[in-house]
Amino acid sequence: MKHKLLNGFIASVALSTLILAARLLANIPAPLEAVYKELTHFLGVPAMFQFIHRLLGFGQAGKVVAFVGSATLWVGGVALAGLLAPIPAAALVALVSVILVGPLWGLVWGAVYLGLRFALEPIRTSVDRRGVLNSLGLGAAGLFGAGIVAAVQPLFAGKSAPVSAAPNGSSSAVKLADGITSQNDLYYVSINNEALDPKIKEADWTLQVDGLVTTKKSFTLQALKDEFQMQSQEFTLACISNPIGGDLIGNCVWGGLRVKDLLQSVGVKAGAKFIQWEAADGFYESLPLGMALEEDVLLAYSINGEALNAKHGFPLRVILPGHFGMKQPRWLTKITLTAEEKPGFWADRGWSRTAYVQPLSRIDAPAALEGLKAGAVTTVHGIAYAGSKPVTGVQVSTDDGKTWLEASLIAPRSKNTWTRWTLNWTPTAGAHTLKVRCVAGDTAQSGKDSDSLPEAASGYHRVSVTAG
Ligand SMILES: Nc1nc2c(c(=O)[nH]1)N[C@H]1C(S)=C(S)[C@@H](COP(=O)(O)O)O[C@H]1N2
Ligand SMILES: [Mo]
Image (cartoon, rainbow, N blue to C red):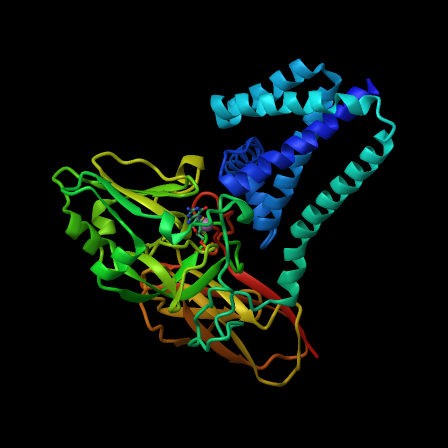
Protein backbone atom coordinates (compact mmCIF):
# COMPACT_ATOMS: atom_id res chain seq x y z
CA MET A 1 0.00 0.00 0.00
CA LYS A 2 2.73 2.43 1.07
CA HIS A 3 4.80 1.63 -1.99
CA LYS A 4 1.88 2.11 -4.28
CA LEU A 5 1.25 5.50 -2.72
CA LEU A 6 4.88 6.41 -3.25
CA ASN A 7 4.79 5.25 -6.87
CA GLY A 8 1.58 7.16 -7.45
CA PHE A 9 3.09 10.27 -5.93
CA ILE A 10 6.27 10.08 -7.96
CA ALA A 11 4.28 9.36 -11.10
CA SER A 12 1.98 12.31 -10.48
CA VAL A 13 4.84 14.73 -9.84
CA ALA A 14 6.56 13.51 -12.99
CA LEU A 15 3.29 13.75 -14.91
CA SER A 16 2.64 17.31 -13.70
CA THR A 17 6.15 18.34 -14.70
CA LEU A 18 5.80 16.75 -18.13
CA ILE A 19 2.42 18.34 -18.72
CA LEU A 20 3.69 21.77 -17.78
CA ALA A 21 6.83 21.38 -19.89
CA ALA A 22 4.71 20.25 -22.85
CA ARG A 23 2.47 23.27 -22.39
CA LEU A 24 5.30 25.75 -22.11
CA LEU A 25 7.53 24.32 -24.82
CA ALA A 26 5.08 22.90 -27.36
CA ASN A 27 1.79 24.61 -26.41
CA ILE A 28 0.08 21.24 -25.76
CA PRO A 29 -3.08 21.82 -23.70
CA ALA A 30 -2.46 21.20 -20.02
CA PRO A 31 -5.10 19.72 -17.72
CA LEU A 32 -3.46 21.62 -14.87
CA GLU A 33 -3.96 24.92 -16.62
CA ALA A 34 -7.54 23.98 -17.40
CA VAL A 35 -8.09 23.32 -13.69
CA TYR A 36 -6.62 26.74 -13.00
CA LYS A 37 -8.76 28.40 -15.67
CA GLU A 38 -11.93 26.71 -14.49
CA LEU A 39 -11.16 27.77 -10.95
CA THR A 40 -10.50 31.41 -11.76
CA HIS A 41 -13.43 31.57 -14.16
CA PHE A 42 -15.67 30.03 -11.59
CA LEU A 43 -14.36 32.52 -9.08
CA GLY A 44 -14.85 35.28 -11.67
CA VAL A 45 -18.59 35.22 -11.30
CA PRO A 46 -19.36 35.02 -7.61
CA ALA A 47 -18.09 37.13 -4.77
CA MET A 48 -14.84 35.22 -4.34
CA PHE A 49 -13.08 36.84 -7.29
CA GLN A 50 -14.37 40.15 -6.06
CA PHE A 51 -12.83 39.41 -2.70
CA ILE A 52 -9.42 38.69 -4.25
CA HIS A 53 -9.54 41.93 -6.20
CA ARG A 54 -10.70 43.98 -3.28
CA LEU A 55 -7.50 43.14 -1.45
CA LEU A 56 -5.88 45.91 -3.43
CA GLY A 57 -3.46 44.69 -6.03
CA PHE A 58 -3.87 41.08 -4.96
CA GLY A 59 -5.34 40.06 -8.30
CA GLN A 60 -2.19 38.42 -9.62
CA ALA A 61 -1.14 37.02 -6.26
CA GLY A 62 -4.61 35.53 -5.88
CA LYS A 63 -4.22 33.79 -9.20
CA VAL A 64 -0.81 32.42 -8.30
CA VAL A 65 -2.29 31.05 -5.08
CA ALA A 66 -5.14 29.51 -7.07
CA PHE A 67 -2.64 27.98 -9.47
CA VAL A 68 -0.38 26.59 -6.76
CA GLY A 69 -3.51 25.37 -5.01
CA SER A 70 -4.79 23.54 -8.04
CA ALA A 71 -1.33 22.11 -8.64
CA THR A 72 -1.37 20.76 -5.10
CA LEU A 73 -4.80 19.29 -5.69
CA TRP A 74 -3.64 17.67 -8.90
CA VAL A 75 -0.51 16.22 -7.37
CA GLY A 76 -2.35 15.17 -4.23
CA GLY A 77 -5.28 13.78 -6.15
CA VAL A 78 -3.21 11.69 -8.50
CA ALA A 79 -0.97 10.57 -5.65
CA LEU A 80 -4.07 9.28 -3.94
CA ALA A 81 -4.67 7.31 -7.08
CA GLY A 82 -1.47 5.53 -6.08
CA LEU A 83 -3.78 3.64 -3.78
CA LEU A 84 -5.44 2.35 -6.90
CA ALA A 85 -3.88 -0.19 -9.19
CA PRO A 86 -2.04 1.45 -12.13
CA ILE A 87 -4.80 0.82 -14.67
CA PRO A 88 -7.71 2.35 -12.71
CA ALA A 89 -5.40 5.25 -11.69
CA ALA A 90 -4.49 5.88 -15.33
CA ALA A 91 -8.18 5.67 -16.27
CA LEU A 92 -8.89 8.35 -13.66
CA VAL A 93 -6.16 10.63 -15.05
CA ALA A 94 -7.51 10.04 -18.57
CA LEU A 95 -11.08 10.79 -17.52
CA VAL A 96 -10.17 14.02 -15.75
CA SER A 97 -8.04 15.11 -18.70
CA VAL A 98 -10.73 14.18 -21.26
CA ILE A 99 -13.14 16.46 -19.42
CA LEU A 100 -10.62 19.28 -19.10
CA VAL A 101 -8.64 19.29 -22.34
CA GLY A 102 -10.52 16.98 -24.68
CA PRO A 103 -10.40 13.28 -25.68
CA LEU A 104 -7.11 13.23 -27.59
CA TRP A 105 -4.90 14.75 -24.90
CA GLY A 106 -6.93 13.02 -22.21
CA LEU A 107 -6.03 9.61 -23.60
CA VAL A 108 -2.43 10.64 -24.16
CA TRP A 109 -1.99 11.86 -20.56
CA GLY A 110 -3.72 8.75 -19.20
CA ALA A 111 -1.32 6.57 -21.18
CA VAL A 112 1.68 8.62 -20.03
CA TYR A 113 0.58 8.18 -16.43
CA LEU A 114 0.19 4.44 -16.90
CA GLY A 115 3.64 4.23 -18.46
CA LEU A 116 5.16 6.18 -15.58
CA ARG A 117 3.47 4.02 -12.98
CA PHE A 118 4.73 0.80 -14.59
CA ALA A 119 8.17 2.29 -15.09
CA LEU A 120 8.24 3.07 -11.37
CA GLU A 121 7.28 -0.42 -10.22
CA PRO A 122 10.96 -1.39 -9.66
CA ILE A 123 11.27 1.37 -7.04
CA ARG A 124 9.08 -0.79 -4.82
CA THR A 125 11.92 -3.16 -4.29
CA SER A 126 14.75 -0.74 -4.76
CA VAL A 127 17.04 -0.05 -1.79
CA ASP A 128 17.23 3.62 -2.64
CA ARG A 129 13.56 4.26 -2.04
CA ARG A 130 14.29 6.65 0.81
CA GLY A 131 16.68 8.68 -1.36
CA VAL A 132 14.03 9.03 -4.05
CA LEU A 133 11.47 10.13 -1.49
CA ASN A 134 13.83 12.67 0.10
CA SER A 135 14.76 14.29 -3.16
CA LEU A 136 11.13 14.39 -4.26
CA GLY A 137 10.15 15.93 -0.95
CA LEU A 138 12.85 18.57 -1.32
CA GLY A 139 11.83 19.30 -4.89
CA ALA A 140 8.18 19.65 -3.94
CA ALA A 141 9.02 21.90 -0.98
CA GLY A 142 11.15 24.08 -3.27
CA LEU A 143 8.38 24.37 -5.84
CA PHE A 144 5.74 25.32 -3.32
CA GLY A 145 8.14 27.71 -1.62
CA ALA A 146 8.70 29.43 -4.96
CA GLY A 147 4.94 29.56 -5.52
CA ILE A 148 4.39 31.19 -2.15
CA VAL A 149 7.18 33.72 -2.71
CA ALA A 150 5.66 34.56 -6.11
CA ALA A 151 2.29 34.94 -4.43
CA VAL A 152 3.28 37.25 -1.59
CA GLN A 153 6.02 39.21 -3.37
CA PRO A 154 3.60 41.70 -5.05
CA LEU A 155 2.24 42.66 -1.62
CA PHE A 156 5.64 43.92 -0.57
CA ALA A 157 6.52 45.27 -4.00
CA GLY A 158 3.40 47.41 -3.74
CA LYS A 159 4.77 49.03 -0.56
CA SER A 160 8.29 49.72 -1.74
CA ALA A 161 7.22 50.98 -5.16
CA PRO A 162 4.06 53.03 -4.62
CA VAL A 163 4.69 54.90 -7.88
CA SER A 164 3.90 51.87 -10.04
CA ALA A 165 1.15 53.71 -11.88
CA ALA A 166 1.86 57.19 -10.60
CA PRO A 167 1.02 59.88 -13.09
CA ASN A 168 4.22 61.82 -12.40
CA GLY A 169 7.58 60.36 -13.29
CA SER A 170 8.39 56.80 -14.25
CA SER A 171 11.11 54.24 -13.88
CA SER A 172 11.73 54.02 -17.62
CA ALA A 173 15.11 55.04 -18.97
CA VAL A 174 13.50 57.22 -21.64
CA LYS A 175 12.15 60.48 -20.32
CA LEU A 176 8.39 60.39 -20.74
CA ALA A 177 6.07 63.37 -20.59
CA ASP A 178 4.32 64.06 -17.28
CA GLY A 179 1.31 61.88 -16.82
CA ILE A 180 2.59 59.10 -19.11
CA THR A 181 3.05 55.58 -17.71
CA SER A 182 5.99 53.59 -19.05
CA GLN A 183 5.37 50.14 -20.49
CA ASN A 184 7.25 48.66 -17.52
CA ASP A 185 5.06 50.50 -15.04
CA LEU A 186 1.79 49.69 -16.80
CA TYR A 187 -0.40 47.41 -14.71
CA TYR A 188 -0.94 43.85 -15.84
CA VAL A 189 -4.13 41.79 -15.77
CA SER A 190 -4.72 38.54 -17.64
CA ILE A 191 -7.01 35.52 -17.71
CA ASN A 192 -3.80 33.48 -17.75
CA ASN A 193 -0.83 33.21 -15.49
CA GLU A 194 1.93 35.38 -16.92
CA ALA A 195 4.09 32.32 -17.63
CA LEU A 196 1.24 30.89 -19.72
CA ASP A 197 0.46 34.10 -21.63
CA PRO A 198 1.10 33.89 -25.39
CA LYS A 199 4.71 34.59 -26.39
CA ILE A 200 4.20 35.27 -30.07
CA LYS A 201 7.02 35.34 -32.63
CA GLU A 202 6.45 37.86 -35.37
CA ALA A 203 7.27 35.27 -38.08
CA ASP A 204 4.56 32.91 -36.78
CA TRP A 205 1.84 35.49 -36.56
CA THR A 206 -0.76 36.94 -38.90
CA LEU A 207 -3.94 38.86 -38.35
CA GLN A 208 -6.81 37.12 -40.10
CA VAL A 209 -9.74 39.20 -41.31
CA ASP A 210 -12.80 37.05 -41.92
CA GLY A 211 -16.61 36.95 -42.04
CA LEU A 212 -18.75 39.53 -43.81
CA VAL A 213 -15.92 41.27 -45.67
CA THR A 214 -15.46 41.58 -49.43
CA THR A 215 -11.90 40.17 -49.35
CA LYS A 216 -10.93 37.75 -46.61
CA LYS A 217 -7.29 38.38 -45.90
CA SER A 218 -4.34 37.75 -43.59
CA PHE A 219 -1.85 40.47 -42.70
CA THR A 220 1.65 40.19 -41.32
CA LEU A 221 2.71 42.80 -38.79
CA GLN A 222 4.95 44.41 -41.39
CA ALA A 223 2.05 44.60 -43.86
CA LEU A 224 -0.11 46.33 -41.25
CA LYS A 225 2.68 48.84 -40.66
CA ASP A 226 3.35 49.38 -44.37
CA GLU A 227 -0.19 49.49 -45.71
CA PHE A 228 -1.90 51.66 -43.12
CA GLN A 229 -1.11 55.07 -41.76
CA MET A 230 0.17 55.00 -38.21
CA GLN A 231 -1.90 56.85 -35.64
CA SER A 232 -0.52 57.94 -32.30
CA GLN A 233 -2.86 58.52 -29.45
CA GLU A 234 -2.67 59.09 -25.71
CA PHE A 235 -5.19 56.90 -23.92
CA THR A 236 -5.75 55.76 -20.34
CA LEU A 237 -6.24 52.02 -19.94
CA ALA A 238 -8.01 50.87 -16.78
CA CYS A 239 -9.25 47.53 -15.52
CA ILE A 240 -12.90 47.16 -14.57
CA SER A 241 -11.77 45.25 -11.48
CA ASN A 242 -9.60 48.11 -10.24
CA PRO A 243 -10.46 48.76 -6.60
CA ILE A 244 -11.20 52.34 -5.47
CA GLY A 245 -7.85 54.14 -5.39
CA GLY A 246 -6.14 51.15 -6.99
CA ASP A 247 -3.39 51.18 -9.60
CA LEU A 248 -4.86 48.93 -12.30
CA ILE A 249 -4.84 52.03 -14.48
CA GLY A 250 -2.17 53.61 -16.66
CA ASN A 251 -1.83 56.24 -19.34
CA CYS A 252 0.31 55.64 -22.44
CA VAL A 253 0.78 56.85 -26.00
CA TRP A 254 -0.42 54.01 -28.21
CA GLY A 255 0.69 53.68 -31.82
CA GLY A 256 -1.06 51.63 -34.46
CA LEU A 257 -3.54 51.63 -37.30
CA ARG A 258 -7.20 52.55 -37.36
CA VAL A 259 -9.63 49.63 -37.41
CA LYS A 260 -11.63 51.77 -39.79
CA ASP A 261 -8.77 51.94 -42.32
CA LEU A 262 -8.25 48.19 -42.17
CA LEU A 263 -11.95 47.44 -42.71
CA GLN A 264 -12.15 49.94 -45.54
CA SER A 265 -9.33 48.14 -47.31
CA VAL A 266 -10.96 44.70 -47.09
CA GLY A 267 -14.49 46.02 -47.70
CA VAL A 268 -17.47 45.64 -45.37
CA LYS A 269 -20.35 43.56 -46.73
CA ALA A 270 -23.98 44.56 -46.27
CA GLY A 271 -25.42 42.85 -43.20
CA ALA A 272 -22.23 43.15 -41.10
CA LYS A 273 -23.34 44.52 -37.74
CA PHE A 274 -20.73 43.34 -35.24
CA ILE A 275 -17.02 42.91 -35.03
CA GLN A 276 -15.62 39.95 -33.15
CA TRP A 277 -12.05 39.84 -31.87
CA GLU A 278 -10.16 36.64 -31.13
CA ALA A 279 -6.85 36.42 -29.29
CA ALA A 280 -4.07 33.85 -29.08
CA ASP A 281 -4.92 32.93 -25.47
CA GLY A 282 -8.56 32.09 -26.25
CA PHE A 283 -9.81 35.49 -25.10
CA TYR A 284 -12.60 36.95 -27.24
CA GLU A 285 -14.66 40.14 -27.38
CA SER A 286 -17.13 41.85 -29.68
CA LEU A 287 -18.45 45.29 -30.48
CA PRO A 288 -21.20 46.84 -32.60
CA LEU A 289 -19.48 47.61 -35.90
CA GLY A 290 -20.36 51.31 -35.79
CA MET A 291 -18.32 51.71 -32.62
CA ALA A 292 -15.31 49.95 -34.09
CA LEU A 293 -15.35 52.39 -37.02
CA GLU A 294 -14.77 55.42 -34.76
CA GLU A 295 -11.61 57.39 -35.56
CA ASP A 296 -9.89 56.58 -32.26
CA VAL A 297 -10.33 52.80 -32.25
CA LEU A 298 -6.88 51.39 -33.01
CA LEU A 299 -4.98 48.17 -33.44
CA ALA A 300 -1.86 49.12 -31.54
CA TYR A 301 1.64 47.73 -32.03
CA SER A 302 3.54 50.25 -29.92
CA ILE A 303 3.48 51.88 -26.49
CA ASN A 304 5.26 55.20 -25.96
CA GLY A 305 7.16 54.67 -29.21
CA GLU A 306 8.52 51.22 -28.34
CA ALA A 307 7.16 47.88 -29.60
CA LEU A 308 4.57 46.20 -27.39
CA ASN A 309 6.26 43.61 -25.21
CA ALA A 310 4.88 40.08 -24.85
CA LYS A 311 3.19 40.87 -21.55
CA HIS A 312 1.30 43.84 -22.92
CA GLY A 313 0.10 42.16 -26.10
CA PHE A 314 2.79 41.72 -28.76
CA PRO A 315 2.24 41.94 -31.66
CA LEU A 316 -1.16 43.65 -31.72
CA ARG A 317 -3.85 44.79 -29.31
CA VAL A 318 -7.16 46.61 -29.54
CA ILE A 319 -7.46 50.16 -28.19
CA LEU A 320 -11.04 51.21 -27.49
CA PRO A 321 -11.34 54.60 -25.79
CA GLY A 322 -14.16 55.08 -23.30
CA HIS A 323 -14.09 51.44 -22.24
CA PHE A 324 -12.36 49.31 -19.66
CA GLY A 325 -9.51 46.95 -20.59
CA MET A 326 -11.76 43.87 -20.75
CA LYS A 327 -13.12 45.16 -24.10
CA GLN A 328 -9.60 45.43 -25.54
CA PRO A 329 -7.97 42.13 -26.47
CA ARG A 330 -4.19 41.73 -26.50
CA TRP A 331 -2.42 39.18 -28.75
CA LEU A 332 -5.11 39.73 -31.38
CA THR A 333 -5.18 37.02 -34.05
CA LYS A 334 -8.51 37.33 -35.82
CA ILE A 335 -11.22 39.81 -36.68
CA THR A 336 -14.59 38.55 -37.92
CA LEU A 337 -17.48 40.69 -39.11
CA THR A 338 -20.82 39.11 -38.27
CA ALA A 339 -24.54 39.76 -38.35
CA GLU A 340 -25.01 38.39 -34.83
CA GLU A 341 -23.65 39.60 -31.53
CA LYS A 342 -21.56 37.35 -29.33
CA PRO A 343 -20.73 38.58 -25.82
CA GLY A 344 -17.11 38.73 -24.70
CA PHE A 345 -15.09 36.50 -22.40
CA TRP A 346 -15.80 38.45 -19.22
CA ALA A 347 -19.39 39.30 -20.16
CA ASP A 348 -19.94 35.54 -20.42
CA ARG A 349 -18.76 35.38 -16.80
CA GLY A 350 -21.10 37.96 -15.35
CA TRP A 351 -19.22 41.22 -15.98
CA SER A 352 -20.56 44.23 -17.86
CA ARG A 353 -21.27 43.84 -21.58
CA THR A 354 -20.48 47.45 -22.45
CA ALA A 355 -17.82 48.19 -19.79
CA TYR A 356 -17.97 51.98 -20.14
CA VAL A 357 -15.63 53.85 -17.82
CA GLN A 358 -17.62 55.77 -15.21
CA PRO A 359 -16.13 58.86 -13.53
CA LEU A 360 -13.44 57.84 -11.05
CA SER A 361 -10.73 59.66 -9.11
CA ARG A 362 -7.75 58.86 -6.95
CA ILE A 363 -5.51 60.66 -4.45
CA ASP A 364 -1.82 59.92 -5.12
CA ALA A 365 -0.34 62.25 -2.51
CA PRO A 366 -0.22 62.44 0.39
CA ALA A 367 0.01 58.69 0.86
CA ALA A 368 -2.17 56.86 3.37
CA LEU A 369 -1.00 57.36 6.97
CA GLU A 370 1.63 59.88 5.84
CA GLY A 371 2.77 62.27 8.56
CA LEU A 372 2.47 65.91 7.44
CA LYS A 373 3.76 69.14 8.92
CA ALA A 374 1.01 71.16 10.60
CA GLY A 375 0.86 74.73 9.31
CA ALA A 376 2.92 73.98 6.18
CA VAL A 377 1.49 73.90 2.67
CA THR A 378 1.27 70.43 1.20
CA THR A 379 0.23 69.62 -2.37
CA VAL A 380 -2.55 67.10 -2.60
CA HIS A 381 -2.63 65.59 -6.06
CA GLY A 382 -4.02 62.72 -8.06
CA ILE A 383 -5.91 61.73 -11.17
CA ALA A 384 -9.53 61.72 -12.33
CA TYR A 385 -10.87 59.83 -15.33
CA ALA A 386 -14.21 59.43 -17.05
CA GLY A 387 -13.40 57.51 -20.22
CA SER A 388 -14.01 59.68 -23.27
CA LYS A 389 -15.92 62.33 -21.32
CA PRO A 390 -13.77 65.28 -20.26
CA VAL A 391 -13.39 65.66 -16.50
CA THR A 392 -14.83 69.10 -15.76
CA GLY A 393 -14.27 69.32 -12.02
CA VAL A 394 -12.48 67.66 -9.12
CA GLN A 395 -13.30 68.34 -5.50
CA VAL A 396 -11.28 67.38 -2.48
CA SER A 397 -12.49 67.14 1.10
CA THR A 398 -10.06 67.32 4.01
CA ASP A 399 -12.74 66.60 6.63
CA ASP A 400 -14.07 63.23 5.47
CA GLY A 401 -16.67 64.67 3.14
CA LYS A 402 -18.26 67.42 5.25
CA THR A 403 -16.91 70.25 3.10
CA TRP A 404 -15.34 70.21 -0.38
CA LEU A 405 -12.65 72.35 -2.04
CA GLU A 406 -12.22 72.82 -5.77
CA ALA A 407 -8.94 71.33 -7.09
CA SER A 408 -7.02 72.75 -10.09
CA LEU A 409 -7.04 70.65 -13.22
CA ILE A 410 -4.07 70.16 -15.53
CA ALA A 411 -5.57 70.23 -19.02
CA PRO A 412 -5.16 66.78 -20.60
CA ARG A 413 -3.48 66.43 -24.02
CA SER A 414 -6.19 64.06 -25.30
CA LYS A 415 -9.86 63.54 -24.58
CA ASN A 416 -9.36 59.86 -23.80
CA THR A 417 -6.99 60.24 -20.85
CA TRP A 418 -6.98 60.86 -17.16
CA THR A 419 -6.88 64.44 -15.91
CA ARG A 420 -4.27 65.27 -13.29
CA TRP A 421 -5.36 67.59 -10.50
CA THR A 422 -3.71 69.41 -7.59
CA LEU A 423 -4.77 71.26 -4.49
CA ASN A 424 -2.59 73.17 -2.04
CA TRP A 425 -3.64 72.50 1.53
CA THR A 426 -2.32 73.61 4.91
CA PRO A 427 -3.26 71.02 7.51
CA THR A 428 -3.87 71.83 11.16
CA ALA A 429 -2.38 69.51 13.80
CA GLY A 430 -4.28 66.25 14.18
CA ALA A 431 -5.82 63.49 12.10
CA HIS A 432 -7.51 64.24 8.77
CA THR A 433 -9.37 62.15 6.26
CA LEU A 434 -9.06 63.26 2.67
CA LYS A 435 -11.58 62.34 0.02
CA VAL A 436 -11.82 63.06 -3.69
CA ARG A 437 -14.65 63.10 -6.21
CA CYS A 438 -14.98 64.27 -9.80
CA VAL A 439 -17.57 65.31 -12.30
CA ALA A 440 -17.57 64.92 -16.08
CA GLY A 441 -20.07 67.32 -17.62
CA ASP A 442 -23.48 66.23 -16.37
CA THR A 443 -22.21 62.98 -14.83
CA ALA A 444 -20.93 63.11 -11.27
CA GLN A 445 -18.81 60.35 -9.78
CA SER A 446 -20.96 58.03 -7.69
CA GLY A 447 -20.27 58.19 -3.96
CA LYS A 448 -22.10 54.95 -3.30
CA ASP A 449 -19.67 52.21 -2.32
CA SER A 450 -20.01 49.21 -4.59
CA ASP A 451 -17.84 46.28 -5.66
CA SER A 452 -16.29 46.16 -9.10
CA LEU A 453 -18.43 43.25 -10.34
CA PRO A 454 -20.22 43.81 -12.71
CA GLU A 455 -19.89 47.53 -13.60
CA ALA A 456 -16.65 48.71 -11.89
CA ALA A 457 -16.27 49.78 -8.29
CA SER A 458 -17.87 53.03 -7.15
CA GLY A 459 -17.32 55.22 -4.11
CA TYR A 460 -14.87 57.98 -3.18
CA HIS A 461 -11.20 57.30 -2.54
CA ARG A 462 -10.27 58.18 1.07
CA VAL A 463 -6.84 58.70 2.55
CA SER A 464 -6.16 59.24 6.26
CA VAL A 465 -3.18 61.37 7.30
CA THR A 466 -1.91 63.05 10.44
CA ALA A 467 -0.23 66.42 10.79
CA GLY A 468 1.96 67.39 13.72
N1 LIG B 1 -6.05 38.28 -24.99
C1 LIG B 1 -6.32 38.91 -23.86
N2 LIG B 1 -6.57 40.23 -23.90
C2 LIG B 1 -6.87 40.90 -22.77
C3 LIG B 1 -6.97 40.22 -21.52
C4 LIG B 1 -6.67 38.84 -21.50
O1 LIG B 1 -6.67 38.20 -20.44
N3 LIG B 1 -6.37 38.21 -22.69
N4 LIG B 1 -7.32 40.91 -20.41
C5 LIG B 1 -8.00 42.19 -20.60
C6 LIG B 1 -8.11 42.97 -19.40
S1 LIG B 1 -9.30 42.49 -18.26
C7 LIG B 1 -7.38 44.12 -19.21
S2 LIG B 1 -7.67 45.12 -17.88
C8 LIG B 1 -6.31 44.50 -20.14
C9 LIG B 1 -5.01 44.65 -19.39
O2 LIG B 1 -3.96 44.99 -20.24
P1 LIG B 1 -2.50 45.12 -19.65
O3 LIG B 1 -2.24 43.92 -18.80
O4 LIG B 1 -1.58 45.25 -20.82
O5 LIG B 1 -2.48 46.37 -18.79
O6 LIG B 1 -6.14 43.54 -21.17
C10 LIG B 1 -7.34 43.03 -21.69
N5 LIG B 1 -7.08 42.24 -22.86
MO1 LIG C 1 -9.45 44.11 -16.70
